[in-house]
Amino acid sequence: MDRVIEKKKYTPKKIALVAGGALLLVLVIYNLLFADHTSKLNVDSERVTIGDVQEGMFQEFIAVDGSVEPLNTFFLDITEGGRVDKIYTDDGRMVQKGDTILKLSNTTLQIDFMTRETQLYDLMNERQNSEITMKQDLIRKENELAEIDYNLALAKRKYERNKMLISEKVIPQEEYEASKDEYNYLSKRKTLADRSVKQDAKLMDDRLKQLDESIRRMRANINMARNTLDNLYVVAPITGQLSTLQAEVGESKSPGENIGQIDDVNGYKVKSRIDQHYISRVYPGLTGTFNFNGQNHKVKITKVFPEVQNNTFQVDLEFAEGTPEGIRRGQTLQLKLNLNDGGKAVLIPRGGFYQSTGGNWIFVVNESGDYAEKRNIKLGRQNPNYYEVLNGLKPGEKVVLSSYDSYGDIDRLELK
Image 1: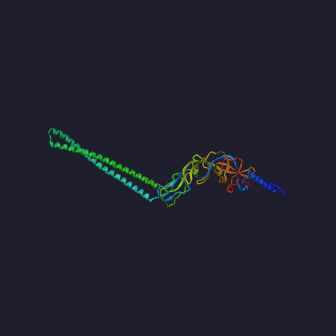
Image 2: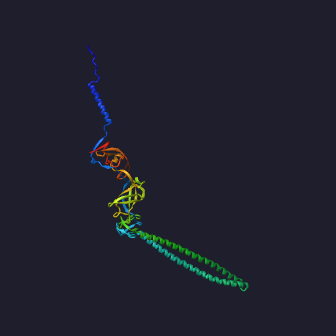
Image 3: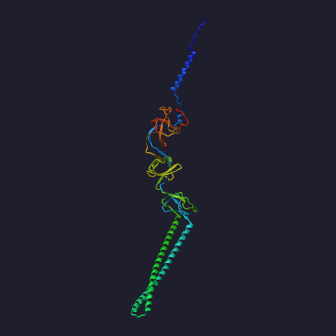
């Protein structure tokens, strides 16, 4: 009689499969919970730049170039045009105030001056001749007046005598009337002659005053013309060094044309152009430093020009402690312009990492120096040498400063 054989639930094969699955599950769970998922990259330690995190004084400044220029410069511009007739000195030489630098010739101006002089002499002759003529007429009329006065005195005596005689009926009435008419006639002539002499005297005085005023104006015009001729001589307005003289004998120059400049060598200043980004933070009184002949020197902003050209604005600076010995016009100086008074801060040196991270994270080297791990940080202000660390780093730690462009999303650098 046959009997039923029960099927085994756990065969060796099934047990092996279950055990293998359980082991795989354990491995997966361990890998998820405890295994190291950090992406790593082996890097040659000699090909990276490592810097120290340190605590120190943070001075926010900008580096700009400045050009040394004379404290005062006078530009030589031609007042009157002409041909260069003679040059008395060369550029680069010292000149004293009033020294003649060059002479121009201008035939038109010279002829105009001579014409004005001739007109003045003609006007002076006219004044003299008019005075002579008018005085002669006045003398003649005064003589006529004197004769009228004499005849009037005779007629008056005769009239008064006849007036007594007619009352006594000694003379005829006709003789009395004749003496009376003559006296009245001469009285009217005297009145008219007096008026004529006074009018002629006033006319003569007015005419001479007009001529004198014309002569005065003509002389003023001649003085202006003389000054114009004097402007053909270009003279030094100040004592200093003549530079960039642009003139050759025989060359024609136009009015207003610049031919050079004179520099006052008693002092120098520095001109600099600064990026417009800093225009709100730069003001007169701001200080800076530069190195010259192995020594640091101080400068101070004296003037800020508000006009922006080519994304920059200009400032003038003075040497705060006197002009350094040996400095020359046109020399370029590398200036450190301080934007604040500075203070203590945690600092890291500038490096190429910033272009990849934006200052949001950095690789921090462990104490043994075997590897560097990615860490989030926060940076603040910066100057050409350092970044200010606001959070994420402590003094004494070391960080990788060189560029991260070839690291991709790597979290850890194995330094070999």
